[in-house]
Length: 246
Image (cartoon, rainbow, N blue to C red; front, side):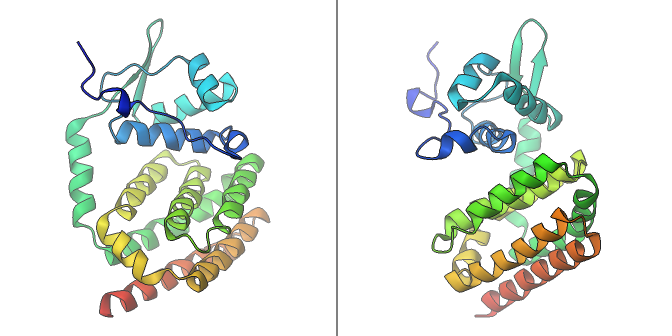
């Protein structure tokens, strides 16, 4: 039977000038495959390509792909069957529930949730982040700082930066919660607010805060890191309140 999605819907990894090196990072490949599953390029029961084929597609090592698949398995998105392969495991009821909550959460409620979650997430990241994870965080931040005139690129890299902080906490539940937060950040309500708030000057200021947070994590300064994330989120809340009343 023909695939109803058709060839136009086949998943293609992001590529282009300069991506080959970045594509080797576990977190970025995990993000691409996660989005491919969530957006329906792969659906419940689909078998993913073999490790060797994925490694060729992403121009990376099979050991990197194994780490990516372990991440996705931990998140409950895939099931690895010995002797058979790797299969997508996507609960439609769970997905519908996520979409329902995403549509009902306002941008200000989102910031309140982030204020509840992220300070402790940062404490754990200071304690638990490996040297490679800190290096990856710095790499994402370098790209984030190039997004001064591109709101969409800034939002995409900002989400990646904060999700990597969640991953560095080494707490799977916090990571899962933060991935749901990023789902809300992609909703139309958030996009409308983003377009009101983000100017090149505001992006510069957010990135100054990102840089201060990163440097505190790099030197394992928990007190400063928590202070910087609170200041960052309080600024976001003030900006959202100003945009909502405008």
